[in-house]
Image (tube, rainbow over the protein chains, first blue to last red):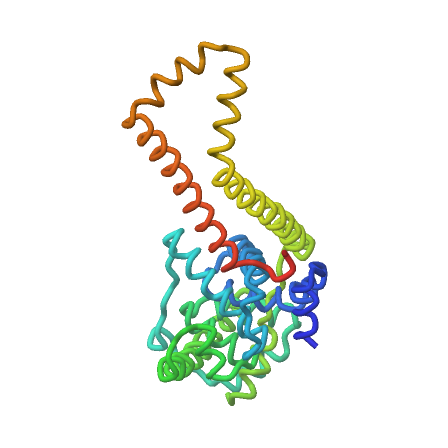
Length: 187
Length: 124
């Protein structure tokens, strides 16, 4: 279906491109946010990425999914923008956090309102390093395979696996801390 | 916590673009880009036509202009004769015109090549 829409756009039906904007804008924004931690910058990045994708659509060989190709543009665009603005992101290690019973946390978070769950999870991701946060979103949220992640991020497979392992560990640890802080605020 | 548990939690991490008319903004930029590309595509074609005409018509054009000037000013031909007899001026003039033409041709080739690299298929 997407191939047909791409062909329509290439044949001159520019408005057909709206489908891709509507479908991929939120995930693209989530990816950019993982790396930049800045909402207005991420929005700008996603806009530029869509424009770039439109300009280069004739070069898309359709060997991979459109989303994989497009998210590669988003990742590269974010890196370029961060380099331009000389921004860096926070990097944490699991050792910085205290290990607690994750089952308890899981139960607690399930009892929260959906909006609060979303806020806490995103705050947790915001405290991971940009690569960890990005890989977590690609692997668990967008359900990309390791091979697709390799194409999108340009990282090699062992690096992806190691970062994912570390990301999972840090995610638990930060989530626990976030939940504890949330509980203190509620009390 | 299993991978499935993380997946369930992570499914809640999708962020929405804060700007309400984000899609409209993007589409507006895309439309503008397409118009600009079409315009520049037309400009490049026109430039190629002009440069080709200039390359072929330059000798004839010069002759025509000199003839035109001579009609209004009979001394013009005599005045011009002094210059046209000088071989250095002649060569210099030809070299100057050739250089200008080659520079323009080089610029046009670069622009055309750049355009083709990132062009849309629908702009013909």
